[in-house]
Length: 238
Image (cartoon, rainbow, N blue to C red; front, side, top):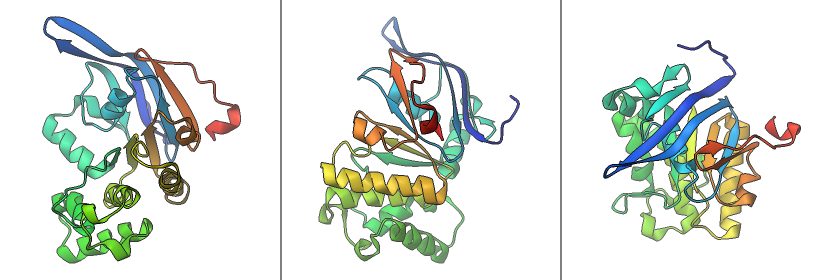
């Protein structure tokens, strides 16, 4: 266990990830070191194949590293079993994806409720949590609608409500505006900024879009599996 700095939520040291294709070993990340403070909003950027989505998936506990340490809230998730990792994800991480990942046969309410079905909350408590989350994204009046009855922007807001409903410390967003027009993308980014500013959520966002990345308080570049030295102005990290 490493010495703790209470201001740091994510501490990554010597992180490496490789995949095996036949007999060939393909390195994706090599020796990544990164600290992310609590309530920080960061954007991971880089060309296709740079490793940014892989890094996001490792931080979110969706994938496991080949070597290195990913300590989040004092827990080195790289050492957890698959079952422990699943429990950790359910309690600590909210996910927002480019294509929403909503269940088409479920209403907005039921989609947002899904993560709560893994908890011990009563039906009444789940209802209260879901309504509060949908209220945060201004979709209370659409809770009985199915995804195909909602616009792309509304579907992404349902996905954001689903990410929020368990009150996770960490929100990971993989190209959250990639499938939206510019105006709707701006509304979704406004919402992410509010989650960061008003609710103190730590947000790690992968994006190709410089305008989306500009909303983050810090931009981190990856190239060929390595972090590019931070060139942000000093005031942009605060």
